[in-house]
Every structure is written in C-alpha cells, then in structure tokens.
Length: 187
Image 1 (cartoon, one colour):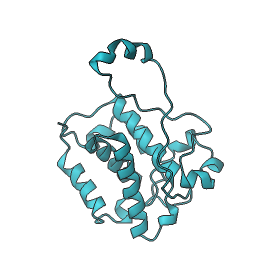
Image 2 (cartoon, helix red, strand yellow):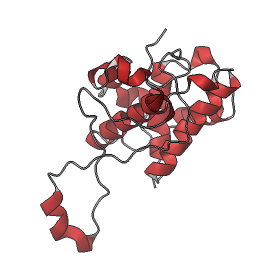
Image 3 (cartoon, one colour):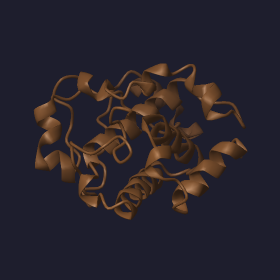
Image 4 (tube, one colour):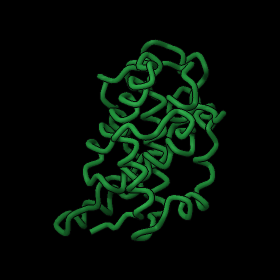
C-alpha cells in the first residue's frame, strides 16, 4: 500500500473541497495536485478524470469554466506520469522533496517545446485531446507485466506506444490565467 505525505494529501482534500483559491493555485500547485492524485488513484484513467474534473470544478467555482483547456491539462498529466515512472517517489515522500529531482516540471512554458501556440489555441485542443505538433510527449510506461507475460514483455520492452487520448468531455481555453490552467505560466 502506497503511503502519501499528509501535507500533500491534505492539499488535495482542500482543493477538492473548494478551500484553495486562485492565488494559492499557481503552476507548481497544479503539478503538486497532479503528482499527488496520480499516486493516490490506482487507476490512471480515474486519476486523469479526477484531476481534470477537479481543475474544471475549480475554474467553474471561480467563474472561468470556459478557460479550462483539455489538451494543456492532459499534456501536463502525461508529463507528470512520465516523470513519476522515471523516478518513483518513496512512501510518504513529500512533493517538495520529489520535485527537486524533476525541476523541468516547474517550467510552466515547457509545453512550448511540444506544441505550437496555434495548435493550443484551436478549438479542438480546448475541447479535446490534440497530440503535440512539435515534439512528442514522453509516454507513461505500459502496466507492469504479469508473471505469465514475462516472455512477451521482454519483446515489447523497447516499444513506445501512443498514449491514449484523454476524455473529450472536458472544456478548454489557451488563454486562461495560471490560476486556472495546468501548465500556464506562473504569475
């Protein structure tokens, strides 16, 4: 059983209860929310829904639901998933300790390496998943093989599978402030 740092779990609980305001939700807090929920939620699809739904609920509470951006949110989830796979945190390890080893996630402009501004500004990117047009995002690893799959897993070890799209039910906006959109530049 994975144990989560109490401060990080408390942050997620406060966020989901609506006790975190825009001033307390800059880019770093978006990454912290994503990192913690990915660790709390055993099902990656459920984690993505929880993160995206939580950020959309946050935006809605603060009168900015139309600014929620599906592609930006999901791209950041994918970047955090890849970083977690590359450097899994220890039980009870705090976000602040882990992120010191993944400082690239604190660069709120990082998506500019993967997406052109025009691609993120499009309606398709706002309302659904759009793959990057400049450079691929790191794909999260495939689930660990079962013992019965040991021989076939070694054959696929070097394969780089496409990451499945996020839910298209979410809403978006490329011009949202940092307090609303995961991955926006901090203010």
